[in-house]
Length: 292
Image 1 (cartoon, rainbow, N blue to C red):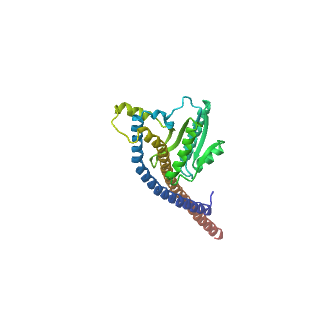
Image 2: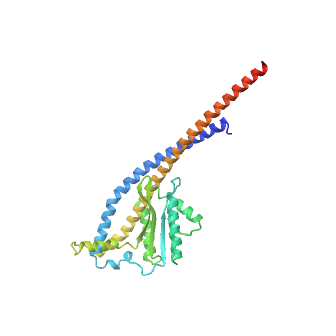
Image 3: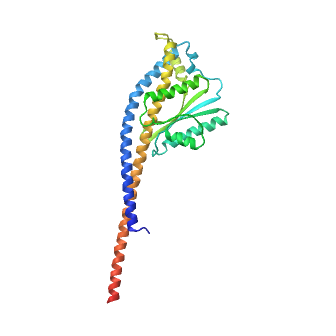
């Protein structure tokens, strides 16, 4: 049976742990608000860029010749990009991305397709390396506050891989922020740039109603790399917000568990103290009876 000293030590330890989890929850909440604001500021710009790109691709006669829109007849090599965080204590946030990336890799290998795994985030790098996965390229230190130049560097590397023919498709695995308690795991193909929206736009819009200067295909060629950069930047922001939301939820649950444990330990301490007092009274009474 635990002694009074042992119970007091456990209570002090749980108190200290609760202070840490409360502090981490507050920090994560502050970072989450900041990242949410950045996502909300980016979404209108990203939406307008996608709409403009759809219009340009619809009205450009040479859009099918664009390297970033070219779909390969046969898929031999696929790049899988896993976006994780640089730190843990965020529930299943990092594990879900790593699990999905490895599931994709195993599925492609079963089809005889070569994969190139690229990791963004210290946790993803460490876990994938530990599981024997060979990483083609990696970035870390971006998850806390991703910047546009980070997305540009990643996008340029992926564009070079695709245009040079080293890979035939690029898939991006990341968590999309839905709410602090819910993140949606996505597997998006970012290269080649999807043409489904272009096809739908062409069917809906019908005849050309816009004039472009310079030519539509010239604007499209300069806009497509920027579209890839925006797609990756948005994924980085979504992943960062999802990480903070997952961490805030995990730390809140840890704090609640600490509260419950403190209540249980306090009850055990009171019972142990009462038992000790009762034992002392019994010893005094027994001693008095022995003397009397």
